[in-house]
Length: 237
Length: 237
Image (cartoon, rainbow over all chains, first blue to last red; front, side, top):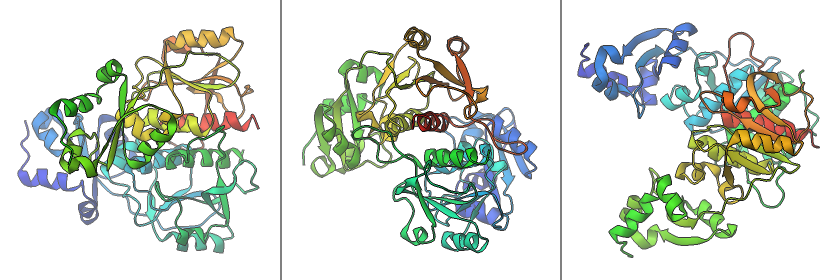
């Protein structure tokens, strides 16, 4: 049985916080599936810790999961790539706070072949352990670039590409006459797209509801992202 | 300050478990928004407990949330409605285990005007506190009927209505020539649709991926439900 020093345990646990992930340039993934995806991904693996080698008790101490998995890896973060507004379909997230939502959106972006994901600085960190788990490995194929969203919208405009935003009073995405390229902005769970970002949106779009009588007031942001992206991609076929 | 007896506290906490929700016919909702939806819903409210009246400490004892909200209500469950295979669009869930997924699917069903939701007996309980929270009030407008899914499929067949199932090797939902009515079966998070249920599916469908190179292996079940239902509903327009 390998004994970890208390400094080692502390260093791994510290990666639960963004401050230490940023200063160390490292993040943690847990579970056999995610660790094997990490190994295949080209990301630099700093350390792999197996329950068989360190024992159940030590694994429980370093794990962020309720039921610790058989394997945990410490991985070097990817270098963020510069933002380029090129032809293609991009996503921008304006203050998405829930880690499960960001992870799910990364998985959606991966499935639908989104060309890039941008997020406001107050969006949850892509290397947050809950984001990593919810991404189901998309974290190794898609990178989120944190930036100023109004400025990003302007760079799309400058490149002659449209900026779409989802609003509850927008035009029906099925009826709207839009090009299936450019930037789609998704708003926060509680407040939607902020006024400051909304000013830079060219086309306000909406997923229609079919409820008869009173129904849901909104869709979850990851669900809305999927339905919107699926429709944009359908139009490229 | 109202003092709750320890029997009262125990009775409310017991509703965190399905066994007691079933025997008492009650469930709990928390938060101002959900409680106000409950009040407007026509569901019978058995008791409302406010933090202002019972104090923070007692609220923390009865709450299932990490940060207890200002209000909690104990509500009588709706009577399950009998299954009727009529013209319309229905969902069936085969072993969906995650409460967040079921709550999100109920919210999706609400938004898209799904005519009924069915689920296998081993699907998570619709009155589980985490399902209720994730449903964002859809729990007051949509009821899940737990039943035998193969038998349900046969009742749709008997009524001349098609049964669709989502499979990773299914036909592209955009290319497939399907009627936008009948039953859509969604599988479990880990295993998809079971073999026993799969035998009763008429058409195997799939949301196409657009990833170039290696990409996500699947979509989250709630996300897949939304994209599928959105496409079926688009065809009814």
